[in-house]
Each structure stands twice: as C-alpha cells, then as structure tokens.
Length: 502
Image (cartoon, rainbow, N blue to C red; front, side):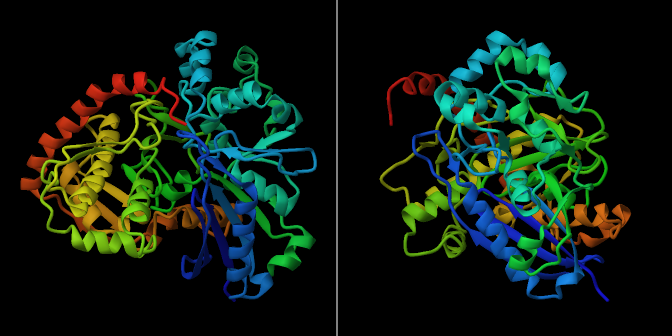
C-alpha cells in the first residue's frame, strides 16, 4: 500500500503544500494566500496566525485525499522570517515578525560595524551586517520595542513557530540559524555568545535545539491530529529557509550548478563544500547535510513582487494570476531594451550583492510615447538584469547553464528573456524546484523512505531555453547601463532617504 509525505512551504505571500508518494508521485497540491504589511516605506511585517491558519488549511485539504495512517511524514519550510515571531513561554504570539524584506534596521547595522569588525563577523559567521539579517532586526526591536523584546521568551522562524504549535516542540533548522547570521558561529554550528555579548543580544531568546532537515523536530499532537485528519505521532521535519529545500527540489544533494529561484524575491545559489566568503554573498548551512555543505547566494528583495505590484496598479481588473499572462501576451513584441526604458528593481532596497538599504525602485527613460506594455517589459528586464548580476558574483566558472525554478519560471517570456540577458542556457523543471517538494523529499529521507541518490531521477527537465545571440549583444549594452545607473543614483538615495517620506 502506498505511503505519503506532505511538503509545506510557508511563503511570503502564500503557503503551498504538496502530497506525494514515497516514490515521487505527486498526488495533489494546494495553496492558501495571504499578505504582509508595509506600515512605513522599507518596513515589512507578517502575522504568524496567517501562517498557522494557512498551514492547517492545506493539511486538512490534502489529508482528505488519503487515509490518515498513510501519511508518514511532514516537512515544513518557511520564508526567511528575519527577526522571527516573538512568543511568550506558552507560545502565544506577542507581535509580528520583521521579515527578510524589512529594511528598518539601518542604524543598528552601523552600530554593528562599530562593535564588531568585519573580519570577525566574516570569520565567525561568513556574513556581514545589513538590515536584511535577523540579528540586526533583533537589535532594532530591543532598542525601539523594549517591552516587546523583554516579554519575548523566544523569537521563532515561521516554520519553527508552526511546528511548535503542531508538536509542542521548539527547534531551529541550521539554515535558519545561519541566515539569522551575526550571532551564529558557522564554524561551530552554534550561537556565538562572544559576538552576542558585544551586540547586547540575548541568545536565550532564540531556540536552543538545532536540527537538520532530516531529523524529526517533533510529532503531531493528539489534539491537532483530530483537527487535521492525520495520525497522532506523525513526525514533522523542520526543513528551514525555503530556498534551501527549493534547491533540494531541483535534485541538488551535493555541490552542484547554479540554481535561480524566482518568486516574490530572487535567489541565485551555489552549493559548495566550503563557504564562499568575502564575495558579498549570503551564506548559511545547506538544507541537506548542513555540517558538510553550504548554501551561497545573492538575491533581489523584489522580483515577482514588482510584477505583482504592476498588475495591482495597472491591471486592476485582472487577478494576480491572469494579469501577468495577459501582460506577457500584450508585451511580447516589445524589443530588447523596451524602446529606451531602464528600471532599477530596488523597491525595498537591495541585499546581496549591493547591500543598499536606501536605494529605491527607479524608472529611467520615460516619454510621452511610453506604453504600459513597454514599461512592463522593462520591469521584466530589470528582474533579468538582477539575475545576471547575482550569478556573476559566483565568478567565471559557473558553466553555461542555470536551472530556473519558482513561480516566475512559468512565464515562457521571462524564461527566454533571462536566457537572452545572461547568455546562459536556462533549464526549467517539470516537477521540481518548489520548496514544498524539497521539504517532502527531506522528510522522506528523514524517515528512510527516500534514497537521496534517487531524488535527481524525480526531477525532469522540461525545457532547455537557449539565448538569442543578437538580443544578448543588445542586452550586454543595457546591462552595462543598468549597473552604471545604480552607481549614479545610490548617493542621491542616501541623501533623499534623510527626508521624512512616511
């Protein structure tokens, strides 16, 4: 009789779940949408109850497809939760999470540079200081929300919070700890008390149990089992930050080629045996074998997010799914370069490799002849330029192919454009690259139901998109101007940010 695994991805704007057999057959999928708040420019907050409600809703839906006892494991990953959700000793939520997109901790980032040398940070954590990282957000909360900070027993990543509710057990995946950065010693795989003391942070407010993605983080309680339609005692696996399982979902269980995940944000990653320090990258233990492999990535704060924003503002009659499809069709004939338009996609500042909190989205080249379809095309080109800039941080030996996964990869136009801009052959997968699939795979490995060597067989390449050489030559010129434009406006935004734009 078939046995099944649930893989769940708590994303920035929705939770996606997959029900699959232990032999890799996908049975059903479900998604539950929600939103996050941006109370001020550069701020981004999320509600933990949205995450828990979405996860339980998709579990109930998918568990109805099979008998309770036949679901043998659940893997849960989550967006990078930044500061994490503040909870009290009973697991009650005390406030929102300042998620990865939040850029408010600028003063704290400067303070870090005064308190800890870049050399010590890099040697200890393989990362530096930036508002992106959770530890600078924790410093902001301690300074600006001292009552909340003091009342908080634990700050929990999204997946850790949900797993606590479902199992009663508190844990943190090594990848989530590494992505908190700053106070995580990547050499010793534990919190760095030395740096925490220098920064005035309390490590006891963080989970003390570190887990890999393939060891059980707890079991479903009797109460939740009855509510969810699954068996009590079903093991739950904390699979960490979503882009790690997403890479596992492309079949990568050892050092491999470049994988680009394009969703709300963009992550271009390379799995290595040693951290690629001193390249402006974000680095943390990989989702699989975290003490032996490292996930090195550059990425954009806003990728699919700016497409969603464009649809919301300029195609109000269409929903988030139909809008991009219609705009793709209408803009198909716009030439490379969008008739002289250039967009900088930094709508929420930018992380690796630029590390700039004050820069914002910029549109260059507008005229009275500009159409919304040209503008939309320029937005897509901006995402493609960001992909190219990110993968170039890995150096020249990255090969001629990249694997593209995530929601944006469903756009044939975007896939071709990324090939044309980067000059690389772009591979997309028929069933792979989704974090929920990767979490299911990791959970399956954890219960010895899935052989890691078999995972790559599940991932089917459905297309190999070659770059158009003529367009690539054109895009080389625009990419040069894309980088030049940022260098010209970055100082302006530093001064401009000093004005109260709330």
